[in-house]
Length: 82
Image (tube, rainbow, N blue to C red):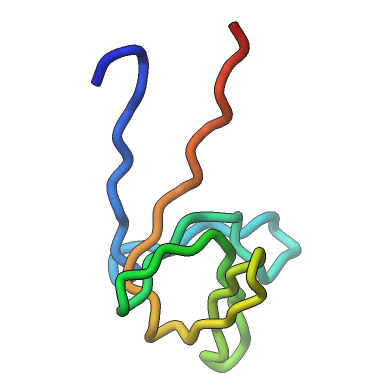
């Protein structure tokens, strides 16, 4: 791709999950995630105890079970100044 733009691909939740925000957190870093209905959201995954994990669209305060999310990808890097 030209002009230094790279293409990111969706990562299956069956292959890998987003990394934790930090070592003391139960929350992932913010990512884009796609649901079984094909909708795309920006948010984070909560890694809970005893399989009580879920995903949250922070902008709209929507919650999704781990079974409702199929793929995710990192947010794009901010544009560098000119």
